[in-house]
Length: 77
Image 1 (cartoon, rainbow, N blue to C red):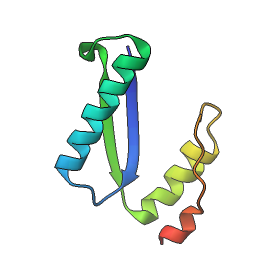
Image 2: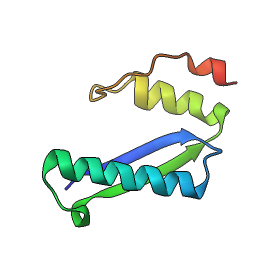
Image 3: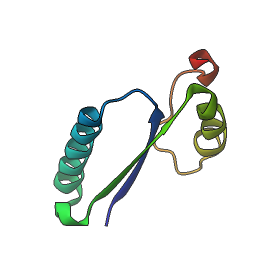
Image 4: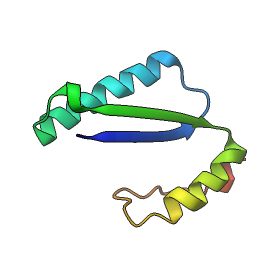
């Protein structure tokens, strides 16, 4: 049962969030062979200042990250 947790900067519209959820759900179902009833998607918004801590703890410190970002989070401040 796939669960996706998305962390992003504040500013995206509800329509954008719904669209990303729909697209991720579709891709997960096609790739993993599961039904959409088993997929959950969580989105949490952060300010640029809050993002600094999230980035350090959950991105730089993650051993399970499959796609690493290629930017300096301090550039967002």
